[in-house]
Length: 266
Image 1 (cartoon, helix red, strand yellow):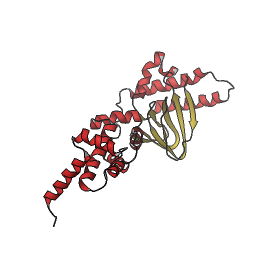
Image 2 (cartoon, one colour):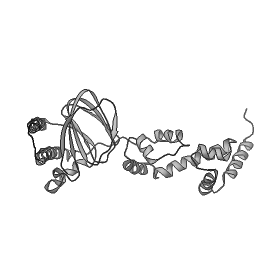
Image 3 (cartoon, rainbow, N blue to C red):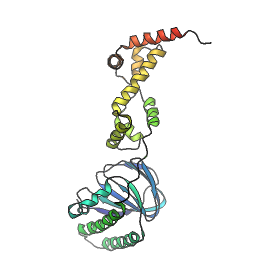
Image 4 (cartoon, helix red, strand yellow):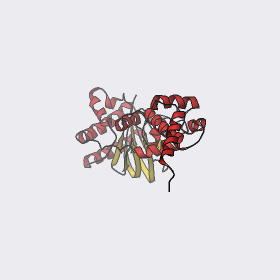
């Protein structure tokens, strides 16, 4: 596949997606906001950002804006063969600013695109050459700079989201969207932070909430199961036996005995 270079304004409404090709966005006019897998920043004229393939990113333009966007399939000429080292540019998302020399090249690139747009047929290799020079220049400048760390995973916010939807069918994709991450990156970062898979973590919160309800309320077991996301009373019973070594009825009796032993509050 070949690279594509285009100039477009970005909608002022917030959008998000991920795609299976790498992307470089450079501001030509106005401003735009990006958040790429938790790394946020703004771009304006002569600054830009790198969006690696399959990274969830949110974006929105501000007012009258225009961006140069370079789409690079993973097998594009500009990042394969003799240029294979340039793919390292996309190891992580980052923001950058163009120095004086790159600003001159950007002017040249825009002029070339204008000339090519007037031709009836343009060989794809022309875009590849323009893209390759830009990538090579960026790589030379950014290779020695460590990428900025992404935003830390906000576990407290995720806990609140899980608790609000505990009675619903929670998917990893729902949690990843809440954290503004792609599902793959969310799974990786979540396990690094908690030592658990998202499914294990949600199950733990379901069980903790169910035990609290059993010990502090007189709700029927079927209702406790429904409120904490278990498909049935028997599913709750099996999970309680596995996690706590006791069925829900025994957990309820233990809670009642503890409350009775505390006596009345004055």
